[in-house]
Amino acid sequence: MSLKVLKEKYSALLLFFIDYRVLLYCFTILSVSICSAKLLEDVIFFEKEITKSSIIHFLLPPVLLVIFFIVSYKVFLRVNFFGTFVKILLLSLFLSLPLQYLNYRKISRNLQKVQGFTSKNMWITGVVLSQEKKNTYLFDSNRSGLGKSLLRFQEYPVLHVGQECRMNVNVVEPSTFDDFDYKKYLFRKGIYSILEVKSYQCTDSGNRALLFRYRLESLVIKALPEPEASLLIGIMFGSKRVFREDFKQVLSISGVSHIVSASGYNIALVVEAIERVTERFSGKRVVLLKIFGIWLFCIFSGLTASLLRATVMLSLYLLANFLGRESNKGICLLLCITVLLMLNPFLIHDVGFLFSFVCTTGLIFFTRCFQKIKRNPFLSSILPTLTCLLFSLPLSLIYFKKFSIVSLLSNSIAVPIVNSTIFWGLGSTLLNMFFDAKFLYLIPFLQLNIFKSFVQFLSRVKMFECDMGSPSLFLIIYLFLFFLSLYRYPVSSNNYYLNRVKQYEK
Image (tube, rainbow, N blue to C red; front, side):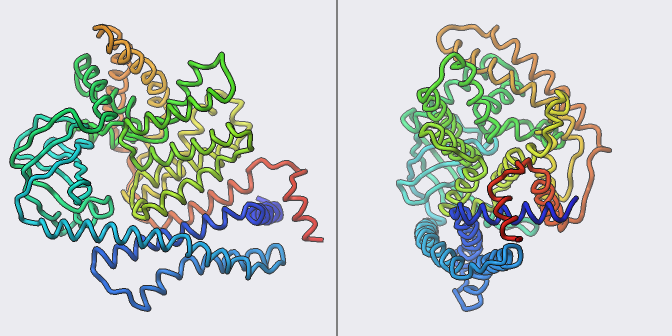
């Protein structure tokens, strides 16, 4: 690796940031938003007072980031942007702090209402959003002021996602365990209460999008046995499904849980499906159809964090194409992440959100560093999988303390299966809405049966799971990936920013 080339490319990147100054604002606002999550948690959850020390800890990361950029421009380009970065820091704080204050007011208000209702019986009305466990559901009761809550039933309830329910409940606060702070875990997800249900009445007058999705899911459940039915539903709609505990463990060990959950991968498949249907057409109408399709899918799937991130990013990218402007996937991704974390800084604790972000970043930048590999059909097919595994490795070390090498093999074979299964499944489901034709599910059933047998076999290969007890490696790995991507990223020798760097050096 030539240090001279690396220095030139890093200097060119700094010049690019100055021309696209919105990126510098995004970096600074991101640091402020991440620090806001810690401050809000300390003030609201732990009930700590705001002191000089807490303010310093809040401001330190964005200030250090600004200092890092000032020094970088001074060392590599020999220019002084001190005043510019002070303005960026102040404006970033001006844009971020009002939103964080609104977050503080909203969370505090909901917590006060929960504490006022704790240990009391009450009637509450809301919409069932998702099934979390066998007898546990996520419930939105915004009209009562409690926000999102967990419903707990003593027996398996007769209700489904999307219904509006009126319930007699006992409000309790989440418990904290010795080995796991469950209350803080729910707090970060915006869930402040658990409702123990005594009686309930539900009607199909709640969320129409979720009800329509439930109707489609019912067609699959009637046609296929488990776990094939839940697998197909997860692949098509990203719906959270309650698998048997042993099969859930199989999916986790083999590293394919992301395939049957709402993620950016589902969004990519929706766009691919629209492109196949409209391949004979072109123009702005097709772009609008893609935007409409991905938002419709996102709403049906419950607006999860990873799906919302992918939908917003892709919408910005498609909208730029619609307006006839040059769009950059990396810029769209950074803008999207910045907006989402400004609105909800606790997304930084969402593991799925983080995995989705790092994998998308790798797919945008890292895969372009290996143009020669793309000429080889086999290597080209596994490059995206290798990239996602490599970029998610540091997060796996942090959160799970281990990394499953077997997931490389399982993802390389499972992804092609899913690519075709979603189209067969959607086609069969839509046709079954109008007439009974369960035989149409034969192809997706066979595919999912092969998928199930394959991951069950791989989950028994214990030797491929590596325990890695050094999570601190994550910083070294990401720095290595950053500099490797920067060095190998294809840039023309006539690149405008590289030529400007050479002028600075003279």
